[in-house]
Length: 345
Image 1 (tube, helix red, strand yellow):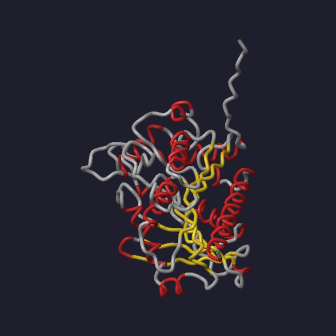
Image 2: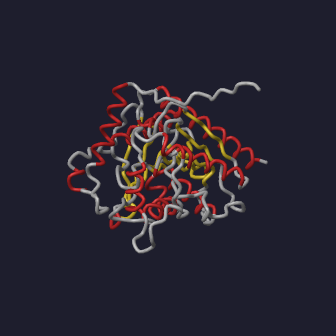
Image 3: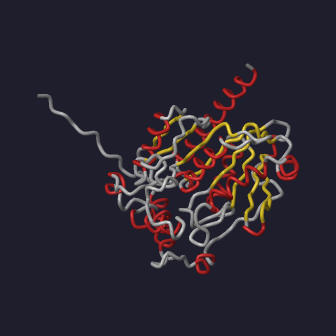
């Protein structure tokens, strides 16, 4: 009998400054989560630093905010690469992460992320400010994000909000963590809606926040890695799901590929780029999502970062973060080219 060897487990590879910053963020934000399922939003706002829009370009990118519904505080920030004004550009509709309870488009990590995407892809970025839990539970977040697509489908809204070179027929939905969850569900809804001027041709789900009743191997094995934990995830899901429906993490909005999953085999879901980190406790759910998409006959591309934890992409000092932006660029250019070929044929 031949001896067999197990492949080594991935180990987290982060500079100590990045590791400390992520750990500090996790510890501080945890302090604002109350045991009764509420959040100390007033205290959190004291350290929730925001970046204003920059009408004058900074490093070739200008930004401005557009209000969709003041009553819901539904708005989005547009990032425009000003040095490419004469070139037709795809549109990225971006949904930020934060466990459905934290952050916004004008938070420093996402303002920086969207500026990077605008210049490197390049693309016009629409970064959505959706309502947060627990003050606003599901489906508030998903409805807000889908309503932005409907808003942009209106010619007058589009002309007032976006530059002339923004091509809404080459739209990509991109989201990370909780935003990755929203990206899938909004793309699914878009398949069933009759848009007039708006076409989603690709989805990028970066370490999407999925879960379920089961405690998976990665959730147990990677306990203690930055930003996610079983205890924190359970708190978030309880704060997110509607009150009165009973708490079950196999809800299809959470366990997208689980026992209550929607049958998407007949939907024309656009190609999906899925990003998974080898040191992300959520990776088992993300890989199940990948397998589910494949079994449903969908076009899906898996990109794995074996030594990265959850949310590594918001740290621009990491070479893996730089690599991810390049891979997003390549995916968008490939899908755009394929879509243009289909159109001409």
